[in-house]
Image (cartoon, rainbow, N blue to C red; front, side, top):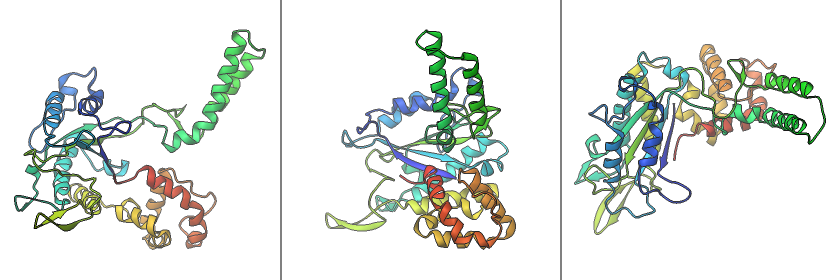
Length: 343
């Protein structure tokens, strides 16, 4: 489960409208019939129009300054293992989203009129998407890049020959291009993976746009608050503040597991990711103590994330322990950061 929370921001300045972001989330609906579309929804309603989303989010910004975010974007990306537990991804992910947002409000250390925040105090809209494309930050693109660079140069050479700026054997160059295409380490359906290519398999994920202000348009609720959960004195009163991100991420996993009966592997947990960053030795020690079948799955998951497991070393044996793990540490850290959970 990969979750990111991102403030509304563009080129160092905050956009004054949610129009562009909402429009971006409508891209998968292009060319589809109404019955085939994925519509925006919130806690109680389905089939909410994009126009209504923009109107409600843009109209809920009282007293926010020009350079303050008007909304936050939450992206929830279940892993392929988690998605395999779903029978009807759209409907089940809607059910999960509605429970997830209860976890979201419960993670605020805030009160409204002397009571804890409830799901009815926030204004949010969500949308399910089923497609993803490869981006420049994906490890497949990065590791294919040397081949892409050589292929581009070979194509440039061919063009120069065709236009009389150079001499050479075009047929030979085309054979070299075909060879480079086959040798690229990451392929999909027999083709070299390139930026913008649609990813295969189930890619269902959730986009959530949540207003910075509460539903009454009077209280600011920021999941990006720099304040840890605490109490301060303001105007002679004790005031709670802060958003507990650790609580939210851990609750998100527990809620998914409870709804779908999912048995989460150690390496999939937010706790494990934090342990790795703070204490890699403890992370690896916990990994090696897993039952054999869980450990095998853990290493499979790690390797699929792009971590370059050292070849010819039996990962099921404790001898790989710290020595090999240190060699993998850099790759693991990149894999974890690429699927970062946080602001």
